Length: 263
Ligand SMILES: NC(=O)c1ccc[n+]([C@@H]2O[C@H](COP(=O)([O-])OP(=O)(O)OC[C@H]3O[C@@H](n4cnc5c(N)ncnc54)[C@H](O)[C@@H]3O)[C@@H](O)[C@H]2O)c1
Image (cartoon, rainbow, N blue to C red; front, side, top):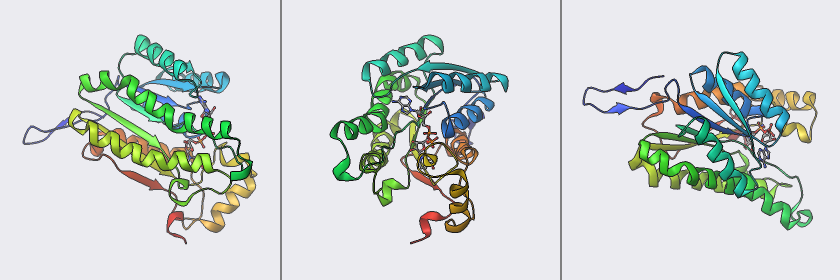
């Protein structure tokens, strides 16, 4: 994807070959698909992941597909670790063009059973870490006068989540976080949007259901008759980092097979 100059001289900026992309939670699910898809667009991918095995696997898969990637082990619940991972990314690749705040945790407890420490850790991983990452790279991205931040929320941000107060609260916060970054940094040519995925075939929903039940739920309850797949979200991310989305910021784009329309 290259920059495009309009007839009045306006540049529609988008991701170019060689641009650096940070993907948090890149070890599996959507994160791995984002890494592979943006690497295929020429991105150099810094995979931030707590799980060393899956993070290294994603980096190997990107390389096997002809792309460039680096695995950085990080615990997003730890601010100092985020700063260390940020410094490692800058040393290896330089200033990111794109940050994808994708990692999250979803501890499943009712309100009364939710330990306050677990709630706090959920907020740290799901919303404080995106803030720390954006703040860490912000000065350099502003200096570069270009960049894209993609936040991954959830339908739970709108509908709430029984047995998931921390998750739902953090995802709700992500929507206003996105709008605030978009408003503050539009003048620096940095765009910020959210993807709101519907239920998809990844480890997260499979924590409390079987693969067969998940696929069946898609057939029965989703208007398009199927659950989502990481490739669906990766396609949307490819658009959102491209020049075709250069006039789009502060938005939340839902991709859920029409599920959100069903009462
Ligand atoms: N899969 C779905 O149905 C669905 C639906 C709506 C929203 N989402 C959102 O999409 C995003 C990706 O979801 P997924 O299904 O691919 O999830 P996933 O659980 O498969 O992957 C999340 C990744 O984040 C990593 N991670 C967790 N805690 C971490 C920490 N402290 N530090 C570093 N890495 C950490 C995990 O190891 C894992 O690799 C999440 O934000 C999720 O909330 C998913």
